[in-house]
Length: 178
Image 1: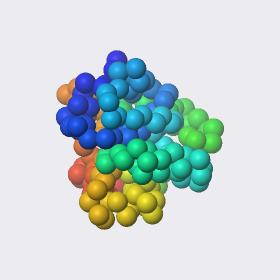
Image 2 (image 1 turned 90 degrees about the vertical axis):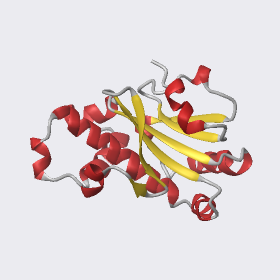
Image 3 (image 1 turned 180 degrees about the vertical axis):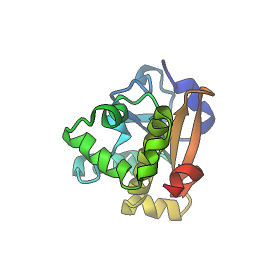
Image 4 (image 1 turned 45 degrees about the vertical axis):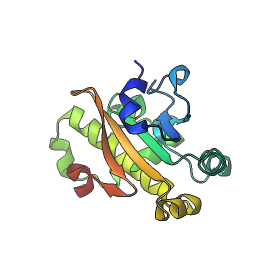
């Protein structure tokens, strides 16, 4: 399934960098529109310790003049399910598990399984938005109001993307309280 059509309301003739999960077919790269650039990584997790990945983001924002960065999450993410269901332990998933379980409490075990996956996915996207927003060149453009960094999560029930955070402002009360 291609989510490109569902992204249209968030793109609105802006030059956008969309960061999506390469493992989950979140976005069909062949259908991307003009002015929309796509970077894929496992669980939409940008490795800010990797200078080449940071340089790539800088290239999109500064050289290609993207005025919006969108991080996509979705509840069908196999990597998030692997952490929750099987506790897989390869390096990127360990990092994601630390991010997600940082705000996790014992009471979370009482939450329905699909809701736990949704919360974990949203927590990951919020963390990624916050991390990217701390890059000096991103922070400068956010302060100048020439760049927005958004986190979107796919909602299976309504078949839409919901904006869960923008420039470190969290819109989802459940996750922000976690």
